[in-house]
Length: 340
Ligand code: KG4
Ligand code: ZN
Image (cartoon, rainbow, N blue to C red; front, side, top):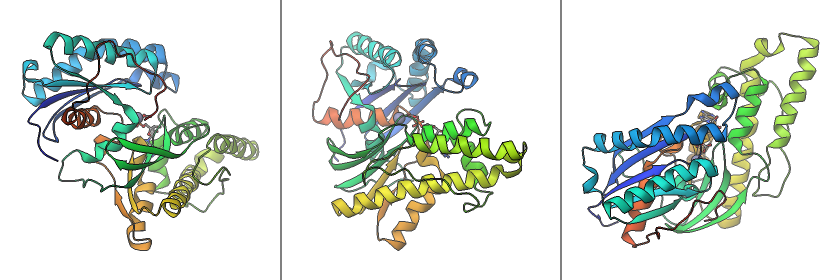
C-alpha cells in the first residue's frame, strides 16, 4: 500500500463508546476511547443515555486525539466517521459533528461502515499484527454482531453467515447476568472459565444452517439450568461458578469454531481473521491459534485495542477510501441498519 502522507481523523459513536483516532500512513498516532460507565447500572446499553453521553464526550475526545497525535486540526486532510450500523441517536452525534468539522475545515468527509471497519482494522500497521492476504474469511464477534464475511478485497466483502437472533457477546453478557455477574459479563465469564472444568456441564449448541448462528436458545438453556439447580441447592452458582463459566465458554467457542470450519470447507479459504470485542476471549484465541498446526490455517488476531469498538479502525478505512477518493457528500445521513 503506497503512503498517502495524509492525517485522517476517525470518529466512532455507533454504540456506547465515544472514540477518536488519528492515522498517518497506516500508523495510528492516537486512539482515544471514552467508555460510558452509566450503562453498568442498567445491565445493558440505554440508547437515550448513550446519545447524551456522546454529546458530552465528543469534543473533549476529539481534542485529546489531536493533542496525543501532536497535530493541529488544520493539518487534517479528511474526517472519517461511522455512518452505521448502530444506534441512531448515537450515530447522529458522530455524523453531525464530523460533517460540521469537515465543513469548517473545508476538507473531505468519508463515511465508514462500522462492520467493514472491524475487518479492515487488520490493516493498521503495528509490530504486533500481520495483515491478512486476500481472499480471507473474517469472523466478527461482538456485543452487536456475529458474522462470517468473505473478504475478496478492501471493499469487496460478502456476508456468508450471521446470527439469526442474538450476537455472541449478548450470549456472554446475558448468561453472565443470569449468573449474577455485572455488565458486561463476557470478560468475567472468560476470567472464571480459565479456572474451571470445561466438561463439567453440557449446554446445547443451537441447530441452524451451516454458516449461520443462533444464541437466544443458549441464554434460555442457561436460565433453566440455573433455576433447576438453585432450586436444589441455593449456593449452586457460587459453588460451581468456575465450572459453569468454563463449560459455557467451551460450548460457545466450539460453536464458533464449528461454523468457521464449515465456512473454510465451503470456500476453500484458510486465511482467517477475527475482530470485535469477543475476539479478546482467551478460549477463541487459543482455539484459533491451534488450527495453524492442526488444520493448516493462517490466523490473524488484532491487537486488543483494535478489537473492541474504537476509532482507529474508522481511520484506517478513512485512509483506504482517501486513496480511492471515495468521499461522502455533505447531506449524507446516518443509517441504523447498513449493509456492506
Ligand atoms: O466490539 P465491542 O466492544 O462492542 C460491540 O460492538 O458490541 O464488544 C463488546 C462485547 C461485550 O459483549 C463483551 O462482553 C464482549 O465483547 N467481550 C468478551 C470478552 N471481552 C469482551 N466476551 C467474552 N470474553 C471476553 N474476554
Ligand atoms: Zn463493533
